[in-house]
Image 1 (cartoon, helix red, strand yellow):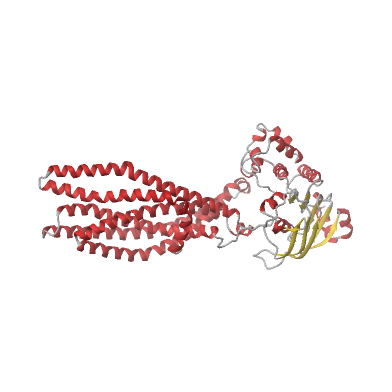
Image 2: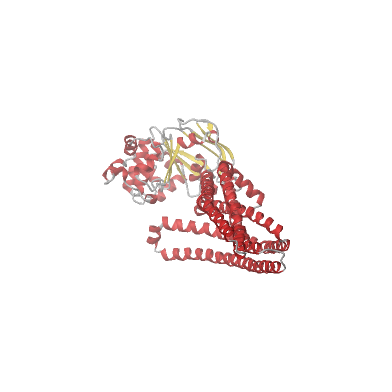
Length: 574
């Protein structure tokens, strides 16, 4: 990433903290200018001692002490508090904006990017950016101080000024060689860290299944291999950085000896004073400290540039476009759905899943969609939810194209209950309050009663304050699904999508879910995707898909008589 683009990136976040940074910068700059006087004050104090002017020496020492107290207790403290405050606020804004933009990514992004990579960009990359920005401000201030020091050196000795300029030229040549390598290494490290976070996240979430499968040691080996790759890349990075630092430190030592030797020669020929020599012992270290800061910043900048590229990729939609919605606002739809000549395929596939699919779903009925695997049953849900867009054709909700609804209307009117619904690692009550913090316990219990889960919740010791556990681990599959149904009801969604909702349940839980679905179909449009046809034989209408098209519709008994594919699917299950 070019320096111009880095400045453009920071400009956006600098505006809101502009006043804080400017005041902090001015205070620290004044502090640094006072710091420049330390070498001069100490040099004069020592020179006055050598000639016996002790009161003058004490006077310079007292000024030195006064400046030091003002520096430490006021200027340095306040200035750094303001700079750090601005940087923390910037980090908060960057992290939140990346998190917000991740929420707008299309479904394809979550198939192509791991959760670990996205988490790294939200947390670690944002931290790297702001830490380096803070370091850059300190270095800029140190550079201003160094410029003042360099002017003082030029006035007193052009020879030493020339020696320093030669040093800077050699420093630039060395940096030009090492810094691009450090940047490339950092890209590789970040990529492997993304992979590592994703693997660790999956392993922890699935630890019970991993133990049950007896593959814990294999997973440990996989994690160890990934960590080993990170270690090797980091080791390469460390060797390059240490080689770079070692060369610069050697260059510092050479400069130090040459400058001090020059000072001795100038004093010998009475061209310079002892005060200048003493002040140079301070200023040279100050100068090299600034150079060290620049060196550290150069290395950190390469890491920051990688982080900015990764964050900017999301913030400015360089890889994926945000989800877009229309302007139609309607949170009380009838629930009439139509697919008109819909063509659709996933971006990573060549074959069309649907080729001119036509489908009509009437409201307040239970509709089941069946077919062999790979016929597009789940894809219909993906299109209704607008996780993906059809290549051509239209999907209408109450005669209005889905893409014309605003986000609130779309999400309010349509809810999905999956085979393994996502449940927050919170209490049962909090899992409902995420929908609306104003929900009363009475209303929540009414929804749970409809979903036939209230009796179970009230039988637990803590009732609605029971902690569910990560992934709903403390609930059975049927309980999680009934909780998800209650959550959908509290959303007051007109259209309820059941994606294989009963396929993993025992007969008792399956019957409970079937009963819930049947009761809900009186006031809701219920669409069920199922492999187990025994769970949908009571549906008001069954739609049979084959090769991306609707080949038959009807009740269970009608399809047994007129659709050979449906009959075969049903008999295979029996």
